[in-house]
Length: 130
Length: 123
Image (cartoon, rainbow over all chains, first blue to last red):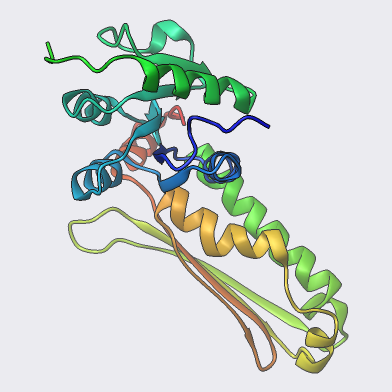
């Protein structure tokens, strides 16, 4: 099997549903990623990102127990950390303002997430943040 | 009123405890009893918490441990899923005469508002 680009990368999981979080963790670990978290809330995600060490990428569930994950997305953008949204809601339910961010709609097969993460990580980092 | 996600997970936990009781513990023995209590507590200036206390008695623990005395996924649900997903505080132990499990869950303010208004809120 080809070596995943996610291998040895520090990937943060932000997901409030325990079973989804655990299955993502297992899937990433099977690729050799270093999983950070999982964390279930905006507060814990921001604390984890700020505490370091720096993560290489993140998976961010848009709706965390009824609280929208936008502050996490904004922090990741400000730090130039690539990430992918996941959501069980329709695409148009996502607030405008993240045109470049990939979305995996639940339920999705894990290879789709792997692909989306790899794509986000291969995109050249922007020099400035609008 | 509890949000549907909490109800689902709490119901699964109670189901796992009951299954365990039927197979190995209180409901598998003539002398076994289960005392289940719940209450709402409102700490000052904080959100209400629902407390569930599951206490078995009259159970031969030797028999329990001989049967395995563990509930696998149900245990994970109580020890890990409820705290992770809902900020619950839980305990689970095999005591001398049966299982003792406590579950405390915060019920967020917005939900109590919904109850006051007489509406069912979105989960």
